[in-house]
Image 1: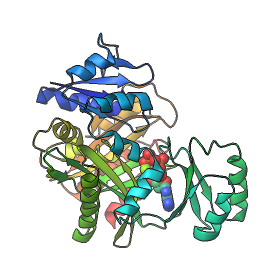
Image 2: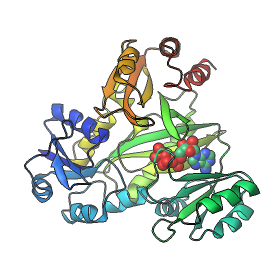
Image 3: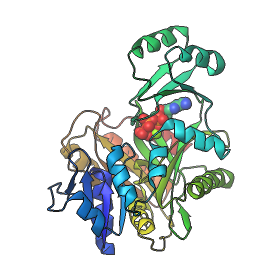
Image 4: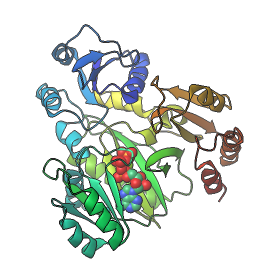
Length: 378
Ligand code: ATP
Ligand code: MG
């Protein structure tokens, strides 16, 4: 059985690896060259995109900013899961916000922005603190501008003077004074069966995810339930098949949706070691319509992203008892090149693992570790 992943990065690679024990052969489409490649070796396979689509049991995607023609071609086969509509919704903040509003799911107040001057009225109505985001193509905090006061508003307006609002409108979002960020990863298959993982707590540095802790500490039943209710509403409305990730801001005991991702997600990588069935396996199960695996968790998992990190340092971290997932990419500043999952039997053991990472002394490579230790110790 073959599954085609649109996109040929690390998410396709890890989906491939999850497919091996299931006897599912995963191939990837490089959307830049429109070639079919091996998801690990990246060599071009002697298979055209249309032949791969013909042979596939299912087609899925590892990211939402895909060329329209490729998405249309995949959609036409009737095998694309999640659907083109779900992928496009996740790739367009205006569509996403509209869907959240239609479903009555809490999210940050926002104003759609189609001209630079509309920023003034947004500032007056929901300011002064705003996060301005492009509706399309943003990731890892790219495509974002911060406004705090009239002065920063003026400089953001100057910066955006040449912006192509027609191609890529913006949203002005009210800044949330959240207590923390958490995310829910869950799967839904063609039978409507749903499996959600426990919430993970996510720590960001300069717009990029650095550490996920799962299960997130101090999650009340009501908070987990709010997240699962939002998941069910979104997944059912989109007739969703596959893994769907939802990022939330937690304010007191209330969750606000930040954004959704119609795919396997970085904040779900902890499931590779922290659960019986990883997000990658459950994604494959969902798209080929197998029963979903349970999301049982018996350990505490810390996922540390390796960003711009040389492999020698990655190995030092993994040698402390973590599982290394190296993506095989060239190392560049700000580039995610791998992650390490540490599992522990108790929060105390997690703290000891993090202290050992801290003691390696690569503080610039691993910001926030002290914050995570403090968080776990609270
Ligand atoms: P990614 O794709 O890596 O998840 P992104 O570029 O799509 O990120 P967001 O998730 O919207 O963008 O924002 C990145 C981070 O910026 C958030 O995780 C959060 O830390 C901060 N942020 C975004 N929107 C807001 C907001 N309205 N209030 C406060 N902080 C925010
Ligand atoms: Mg995000």
